[in-house]
Every structure is written in C-alpha cells, then in structure tokens.
Length: 265
Ligand code: NAD
Image (tube, rainbow, N blue to C red; front, side, top):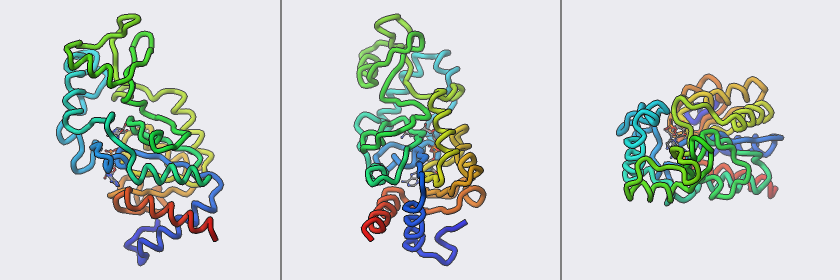
C-alpha cells in the first residue's frame, strides 16, 4: 500500500493517483460524512462527531416507533446543533467530484450521505445508499414531503407529523439503524463496485455495513482501491492500495487538477 510516509511526497502520490484515474476505464466514488464536514455538517465518528453528543440508539427504527414524538424533537435539536442540511452548500471536495464527472472520468457516486450535496454540486449519477434527509416519507403510503415543510410543522407543535393524504406517520427519508438499504440502491451499488476498475473512497470511517463492504467487492473484482481520508480506517493496510491523508477539501481538488493537467498533455 502506498501512503505519504513511505518515502513519497504528497505531491508525487497525488500525481501517481491522477495517472491511475486517467488510465482507468471506470472510476467510481464511495463517499461518507467526512466529505461534508467542510460544508459545516458534523460527521458521526470524527473528533467532533454527533455520536459524542447523541445516543445512536435514538437513531434506530425501534426508537422512532416507540417514541416518535421524542424522535422528531431530537431532529429539531440536532438541526440546532449544526446538523442542518437545508442551509449547507457543496464544498471544494464536492465540486472536485462534479468536475471529475464533467471531465468524463467519474462514472457515478455512491454516497452514504443524506445531505444531497453531490447533486447540488452537479454530479448527475448519485446512488443514495442511505436515502436523503431533505425529504420526509410517509411510512404507510410512501408519499414524500420536503423536510423543511415538515420541520416547520413540527416546530409549530404537530408532533408527530402526519401524512396529509393517509394520516400515516412521517419519517425522515433516510435509513435508520435496523432499516434495510433501499433495494435498488443496494443492487446498483454492488454492480458498480463489481464493474469498476478504480474506487475512490472518500471521507468514510468504513465501519457502517453494508456500505463498508463495497470496497471489498471492488477489490475482489480486480479494482484499485484508493482512500482519501483524514485518518486511517479498517481498510487502511488491508484493502486500500493507496491512502491520501488530509482534509478532502484540499486533497481532492489537487487530484482533479492533476487529472486536468494530464488531459492537456
Ligand atoms: P463517519 O462519521 O463514520 O466517518 C467520517 C470519516 O471521515 C472519519 O474517518 C473522519 O476522520 C473523516 N473525515 C471527517 N472530516 C474529514 C475531512 N474534512 N477530510 C477528510 N476526512 C474527514 O461517517 P460515515 O463512514 O459516512 O458513516 C456515518 C453514517 O452516518 C453514514 O452512513 C451517513 O448515512 C450518516 N451521516 C451522514 C451525514 C451527511 O449526510 N453529511 C453526516 C453524518 C452522518
């Protein structure tokens, strides 16, 4: 595995990766909460992660059904604590991935994030592995509502918020612990992982399954696996061929700049 401290400067490592990207037939990206921290959205397990302040048990489907009123109150409290997706804007890392797609080098993004920032940045093929918290969904009829509208209803006392059509309870359209991954997203992500020849793994602790299993699918199908993260993960030294350590808002734009330079040669 290649990393900075093995007699290789950051610059050379980035140049080498840019070459791999420009030579690959199919590059895909798997992203996690770490790509959005520089947009002001806290991650879960990083040093300032939400799990330092909240109990993950309160993000389970059991808790949602047992105490729906409290669950929604916590959604509002988390928004006040910085987990406010409605105001977040794409940062240089999201924009770099959009640029990589525009240049014709990125086939799709599989994201564990629920913030919609890849689409806002301009990526057109985004597989939402864990749904999207900018929407709420009725657990009965599956009708969707904009989250901003539902949160306003909650703030004005509608607890729990109900579907205007069938009276079912509304839930954020994000996958809670214990809920299955949406089937279409799961199968498509597995197919993309099995058919790529380079996977960029960006800003994820690679601990939440089944998303954390996608790099092994890519690797066992012969793909190169590249981690771009602030810290090592369980993939580092096992599955990854490269790790580029540091803030993604700095490293990803540099990588894409190098790819652009190669294209101009
Ligand atoms: P995680 O919190 O488990 O791990 C984030 C990783 O990114 C950590 O290793 C951290 O060190 C790294 N990181 C943080 N900021 C970084 C930066 N600026 N540059 C480089 N690396 C950085 O996140 P996960 O693996 O995605 O799993 C958490 C789950 O929680 C996801 O499945 C997702 O559904 C959900 N989540 C989503 C959001 C969001 O939509 N923005 C935010 C928090 C959690």
